Length: 406
Image (cartoon, rainbow, N blue to C red; front, top):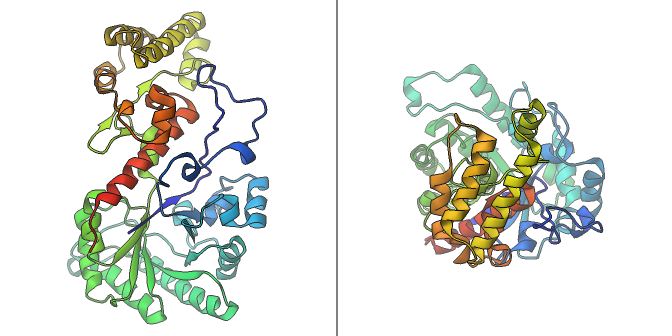
């Protein structure tokens, strides 16, 4: 079972100064900053997935790459651009989420093949048009006409894509994209893609589905799947169900969920093998938009906020060095929280007390926790938050390694 990490140019600076919260004046981002596979060992994924929509943009707007970044990717190729070790593989897709509201995908087959080929991907997924909707018993309900049309568009583009890769002598492995709205329609897509000639198929549009719904689709696909057809789950990370998924032909998946939880999840943002903790929020006075608005409106004194912020950081570091008590840290956190949140917002103090009492970073074997200690458990700025995301990836890697596939 291979795990691909979808890229969105997530890097951290090895020379970032946590005490002063500043970058080195000599830092050059594209030269000095590092990806997760450079920051931690073992490498927390088997490969990366890169979307054309992220790199080049789509009809909805520009991609997340700057023009120099995009040009450098095309010039260096995906492996050199990401400084990937030989053990990591690469897969490209179109990023259907980015054009979900369009009538048709914004790309032509030839330009997608050019993207995969010029960047040197190991595999590339055919153009698809995502379907968001699920009908468990399809015989009882008529699907929306738009769903049927999107499935047909995806199948037609997959046929054109495979034919063009053969004609052009493409060096990457073509992967067919299957879309559906229930077990039978996904099975239909897989059957058609196999008939076209695909032996590796990516199942899209399943992100909103519950695990038992994904399993229902995989069981239906079993009825038509050839024994040598491999399945990839797009955007799915359900570790508890991966062993079951593997029994139905799933050999790979991609997801950013554990990484994004580090800064998107309100509470469960620091992961361990057996639990999840709440990172301790210490907003930057000069960098937090909500806090800056309070200061500009006169609701909060800037001087008072800076004093409380510094007191929290000092107390947390002293606690990690066993130089102050848990009670003293919580007192400092409560003072800053009441200043920033006000009386009507929910308090995180009980969750912080649990995090500090257990101090999970002290027992974590990952290189980032060993190096940075409590800084990883502080919710504050991208350098800490992305490092915590990288840490979460190491936890996922360890969980995947402990599973039994067979």
